Image (cartoon, rainbow, N blue to C red; front, side, top):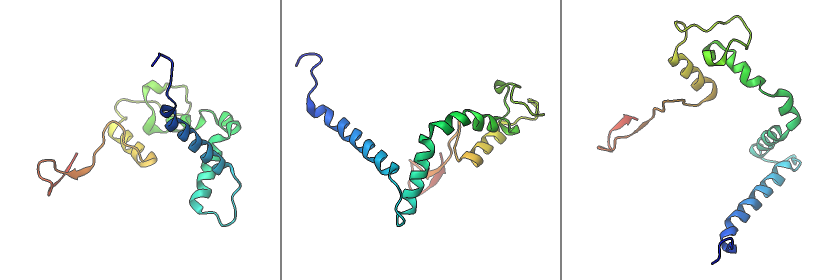
Length: 129
């Protein structure tokens, strides 16, 4: 087979995936009938909010900057250009408090992931991993 020749069966998964994306977009852009499932309606609302470029351009980075204005997230790398009275202090800042706040506010583990799992050596015991 010559270089640059692509067998059509290699492209089938890609074309199916593209078709699925197009179909999903069409589904999410369609008007909501009164008897629509609540989950589908919420998915449409989320999709529209993500696709509304006008609002995204207006909002810009303000939500992220608002997060960085919170004392728990004020780090020296953020700089003092965020305004407010808070001044970063090494003695007052705590990595543990910051990671805890990220977990509380956003439901995300950062740097460290701890979970309970069966022990690899003895599956009847559970350990922290």
